[in-house]
Length: 124
Image (cartoon, rainbow, N blue to C red; front, side, top):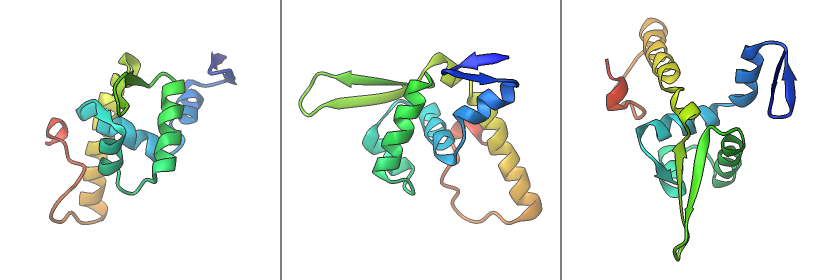
């Protein structure tokens, strides 16, 4: 058995699915792989997400120790989000997902023009 975040799991895949149960969390992590970011930067990077949903997802990821939230004592308040060491370990997972997505589109769809989520780190 696996016990984490006040839950019991029979399989480690269940732990992973419990943490990453929606597309927004993975998108937040994807953009934090590039650099630490403020809320506004993340919201601009993930333009389809509402501010309310982004706030909820950031809190969930922080509570699961995937991201850090650092508050600076200045006016106006400055908050910066970054990945924790365990969050940074997701880099090869997301790189594989990124490359698989490209392979899938090449086989089953089309690629055109600008690809907004491409990062220098993951270009083939």
